[in-house]
Length: 353
Ligand SMILES: NC(=O)c1ccc[n+]([C@@H]2O[C@H](COP(=O)([O-])OP(=O)(O)OC[C@H]3O[C@@H](n4cnc5c(N)ncnc54)[C@H](O)[C@@H]3O)[C@@H](O)[C@H]2O)c1
Image 1 (cartoon, helix red, strand yellow):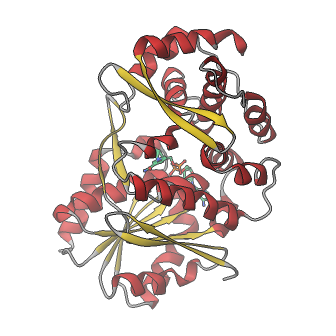
Image 2 (cartoon, rainbow, N blue to C red):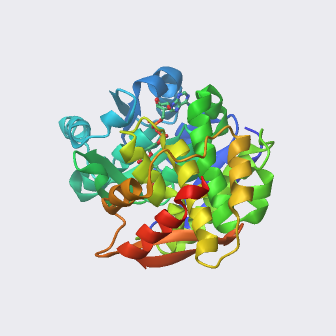
C-alpha cells in the first residue's frame, strides 16, 4: 500500500474513509479493527465478484471474519426491493444478529442496496463500503444515503444509514470500462464547480495525475456538506448541481443517456441559467473541462419536456424547486424557484445550445 488518505466523517455516526492504491488484500484487517469479531454478508455484482470477490473473501477469512456472499446481476435494473429481500433472507437464514455486518462491494448499485439492507435488517446493523467505481468512491459510498428503485422512479425507497468504514483501493478503478470511469469524472468536476476551484483546475485536463488525492478532495467536500446537513434539508442539496436537469434528461432518454453524460449536460444548462439570474457566466469554463473528458454537453430535449420531467424529481418540494447555480467556479448556491420561474429559466436558456 502506498500513500493512504484517511478522512474522518462526522455525521450521526463517525467513520473513516480510507483511500489508497493497492491494499485490497488488507481489507479484512481494516474491517476487523473497526467492527471487531463478527460475521459479514457481502453484497456484490457478478462483474465485481469475478474481479475482486475472492480476494475480499480471502482477506476477511484471514482476519478471522466469516463471510457469506450474495451476487446480483450487474446494472441498475438489479437495484430492486426484491433483490434486497433475497439478501436479507440470506442473512436471516444464516442467523445473522445485530453484532454482524454487511459489506457493499462494487459501484453505487451494490452500495445503495447493501446500505439499505443494513438499514432495515433487524432495524439496522453496521455496514462497510468497498467502492470499486469512481462514482461510488467520490459520492455514493459516503454520506449514508441508501435506496432501491421502484416503478415510479429511481431511489424512491431508501433510508439514511451511515457506514462504519469506507475502504477505497484506487487500483480497482483500473479495470473499469472507460465509459463508467468517465461518468465518475462528471461528479468529480461537479465537486470542483460547487465548492473547490483548485480541484476544478487540478482535474481540468485529463489524465488526472494523482487519483488518490482527487478522490480525497471530493470526499472531503462531501464530508463537510454531510456534517452540516446529513438529512439533505439544505446545504447537502449543493451536491445536486447539474442533477435536476440531468435526471430529467436521463428520464426522457429512457436511461439510454448515462448518468454522467446527463449530469454533464445538466451542469452546462445550470451554468447557462446563472447569467439569466444575474450571476457570473461560468458556462465556457465548465463546458470546456467536460469536453476534455469527451462529454457531449448538448441537450437533445426542449424546455417544456425538461420541465415536466423535472417536476417528477423527488427533490421538488410542494410547488417549488431548488436549483443549484454557480456564482463562480468553486462557489455555488441554492436558489428556490417556483415552478413557473424554473420553466422560464429553461425556456430562456433553450436556444443557447
Ligand atoms: N447513495 C448516494 O449518495 C448515491 C450518489 C450517487 C449515485 N448513487 C447511485 O449509484 C448508482 C450508480 O453507481 P455506479 O455508476 O457505480 O453503478 P454500478 O454499481 O452499476 O457500476 C457500473 C458498472 O461498473 C461495473 N464495475 C464496478 N466496479 C468495477 C470495476 N472495478 N471494474 C470493472 N467493472 C466494474 C459494474 O459491474 C457495473 O456494470 C445509481 O444507482 C445511483 O442512484 C447513489
